Image (cartoon, rainbow, N blue to C red):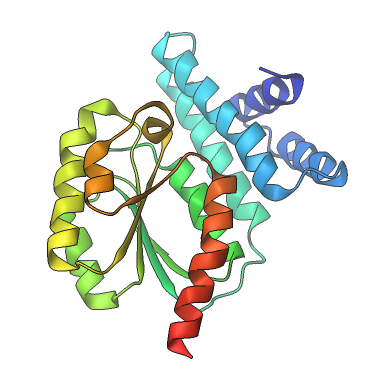
Length: 216
């Protein structure tokens, strides 16, 4: 773990938003683009906080403070985002039982930076609720996050239900689990998987162009 990640992790555990904003500004000033900052600094810090909690080296309150601080930071950094109501739609959520949503919040920002019209449903979303929203809003893309092996059966069922009701919709799955396992059932269901935000950013550039061309 490099020094920047250590400093960032210490700041989110302390709830020190000014220090975090300064770290972000100095990193961008040093020619580190936003996606690299998310991937190389924010994500490792998130994982480090999770590891500390799992090892009982920080309390539940510490973990909640770190999560709340990071969410506030993201909201502060992205207050400039515009609404793209007439652009391709993407619906993002964590499956039922998955409560860690910060990674998906970062992915949501990637979508918005690429001028997608997004709806972010958050964590622990039952598949029936997701299907209701899909039917009502008619997005072109579904983005799902998973980080726990215990939720693999739910992920398989969720993808199967969405694909059954919407055979042509684009389904993307990312999260910590994708980085560590090969999930054949996702490939069988024509699901695209992503290991990091940089890869997602590159993919969305091409995908948005396809939908805009179809619309035009």
